[in-house]
Amino acid sequence: MGLFSNWEKSNLKCSIFGLDLRNAIFLASGTFEYGLLYKNVTNKVGAIVTKGITASGRAGNPPPRVFETACGLINSVGLENPGVKVFCKDILPEMRKLKTRIFVNVAGFSVGDFVEIVGEVGDQVDGFELNVSCPNVEGGGVAFGRDPEICSRVVTEVRKTTTLPVIVKLTANFCDPLLVGRACVEAGADGISLVNTLHAMAFDIKKKKVMITGGLSGPAIKPFALYCVHHLRDLGVPIIGVGGIISGSDAYEFLLAGASAVEIGSATLRDPYAPLRIIQELEEFTG
Ligand SMILES: Cc1cc2nc3c(=O)[nH]c(=O)nc-3n(C[C@H](O)[C@H](O)[C@H](O)COP(=O)(O)O)c2cc1C
Image (tube, rainbow, N blue to C red; front, side, top):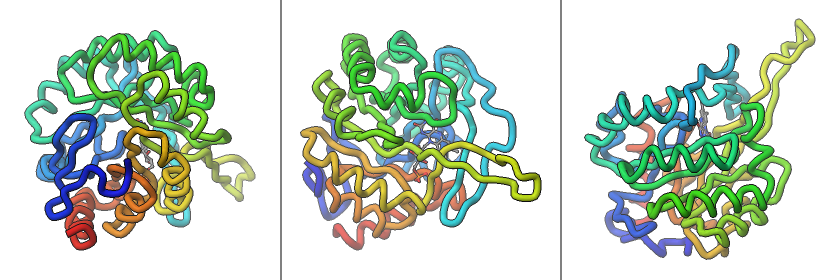
């Protein structure tokens, strides 16, 4: 696995989970919505991962929801989404007109939630990314994702529900993602993506109180995310690297670390066209 195992060097085409992709650049969950606002970008990447979809709709967390740090961003969106039924009825039909692969980011608070959401979506998409790692929600989320046994149960049950590719998105918050990753692969996961955002907080020093707690993303976490990908590189399934990628050379570093593909997240909040630039820059390294 890893370095260029699945790449045609000359044109970035890639084959992963039995799917042919235009390239190995994915749009990460939560930072590009459902890919419908900038179709000219979505249609040029290998795949889009949707915002986390829960069983019931969620309004998300109260403000403040985002806070800029040195080289990063703390977010506390709290999985705002319309719920799986509305997603399937109103959003998915539009997404299916896109010319890219679609992965649904599944955000459950129990094993049953994961099974319900995957079952409801069915085979209308190309695969699933199980989000066992959101740091901004009570219950489920990150505490769930630290436990190899619970994650293994999630994958086992989801595996019975779908034959489509199942990626597990891991947390690296206060745990060893290798232990959880190994349990997920043994339970039948087709791939691993990491990292989700890292626990973070910021203070309002005038009011002497917490301004925000949430998940840190952006270039500040890239060296840590790279380390995590390298740490899991021998798991025997494709690893998708995510965390702080803003350039082709960042993406290339993830490939060198053992990733088979990468996801672009916060970079698109500053520049929605960043993925196009990153693809072009990456071609310089792999061409
Ligand atoms: C505003 C925002 C919302 C996010 N929402 C989700 C989500 O719904 N599901 C998920 O698995 N990850 C979510 N993430 C995490 C990203 O997909 C990604 O793992 C993380 O931001 C690190 O990558 P980056 O540094 O390139 O942003 C979100 C990140 C941000 C900044």
